[in-house]
Amino acid sequence: MRLAVQLAALALATPLAAQTTLRTFAPPQPAFGAERFGSALAAIGDANNDGVGDYAIGSGQDIFFDPGRVTVVSGLDGSSIRQVFGLHFGQEFGERIKSVGDADGDGVGDFLAHGSARNAQVADGISEVRLVSGGSGATLRSLQNSTTGNYQNATRRFLGGGEDLDGDAVPDFGVTGYWSNVDRTTRLYSGATLAPSQELGLAPQPSSDGLFAMLGDLDGDARSEVAYTSRSSGAWLVHITSGATGGILRTCTPSPALASPGVFELDLVALGDVNGDGVGDLALGGAQAGRVHVFSGANAAQLRTHASNEAGAKFGFALAGGADCDADGVGDLIVGAPLSGAGGSQRGAISVFSGRTGALLFARSGEQDGERFGWSVSAAGDTDGDGFDELLVGAPLWDLSSSPINGQQIGRVLLISPCPLPAREVGAAKLNSLGCLPALSWSGNASQSNASPFTIVAANVLNQKTGTFYYGLGAPVNVPFQGGTLSAPAPRRRTPYQSSGGSSSGSDCSGAFSFNFNAHIASGVDSTLVSTTRVVGQFWSRDPADPFNTNLTSGVEFVICP
Image 1 (cartoon, rainbow, N blue to C red):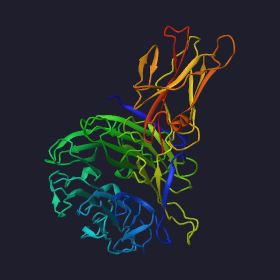
Image 2 (cartoon, rainbow, N blue to C red):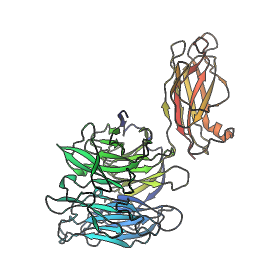
Image 3 (tube, rainbow, N blue to C red):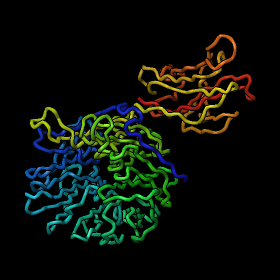
């Protein structure tokens, strides 16, 4: 597949506040000091049996007299279901969380939580990786250091899990720690027993630097594969290893080369199948370079690259896959840029890209200087039942103005609906017989229930000519047709004919067409136009001097929201 580069114009992208904030999660009690609520996120399923998925949110406290915590919050109303605390003051427990699937068989997803005491006031340097039941909050497994330094510098990116590595139908996981000054070891553990697994040959392997993701079964051997990073001549690579043998199946090479000062500038996630070949794919983010590279899990080919046009935004610092934000059946990619200056100073931003096409679906920035919106991101599932997956975004340095200690880093998390989704232009317009190129534009958003207009306009067309807006459902086809480009897929629906107007005599390009598609939806004339439906439409009009007696505008692609 030809390499595609997508520029994420974080400051000038599609409307930054267009998407709906469904819910804001905040710490459940008055915070003291640097709460940093939203340092890490994980969707864990329905923890309180109310039929709505819930979330684990980490507070990586940065003060020595607080151990840190993970709060399990209700996806229904944002209330606190339970809290899980660190063991010792200064542990910063909850600074990293990883969802791992249902390890204890209670039907609720479980999660890994990590905390490492790097504060000088903490004598024992306790560091712990804990496998926690999402349903009960109980500790299922615990890995603690036996000497100061174990897991000491492990970051949230050094936790991985959720796939079955040993074939026992229980999700397994891995952890990387600095066991010594030179030994950076990735160790894989059985979710059922905590027995170390050496089947992948990743321990010890100092060059791996511990960044890894579990991809699912890519080769049909009933064992999940693992992708991990390594450096070669200062550039980062991603190796996909066999779940059965541990051998390297293929190596992904970012182009241009992704050089980074350290693993802390990277993130690696599994995406699911974004290119339709039946094999899961993956993405590697390089925050220092401001790029995200998407690779095929089948052959390691680079499918596309997303790049920021804002220096220093840390675009690619946090990644998440699996959220189908545009309801096309393919998971999309969420990219965090927590130092973006869009709209202010270090407010942070996120960009959401279509998994199917790589196109920018929408972007959004933070609302407060310094809040670092996009530090953590996660797929949230379809929480409101509208057919569109929501997303979670953490802003751990957000300041709650009503806090007893104003000016401290309290943090918050937003649950964001992708709707309304902005429309985009597809295909190309056809020059008419006078050499004029029709210009397509629109205003508003497509909605099944919103009475506000979604008006599509074609300007610069021949005056006093008959035309119609026609459309089809599905992805654009963009095929040659009568000297132009046909974008709407078959079968195509035709709306009532209208006159282009313009000059009452002579022949010029003063004509225009206009069509309110939301009114068309509300009329009920087409019962297929419901929420989640993808529509591609364009204007056709008569052009007597054209060999085909026809003129076509470019197409507009949009998704109907509730």
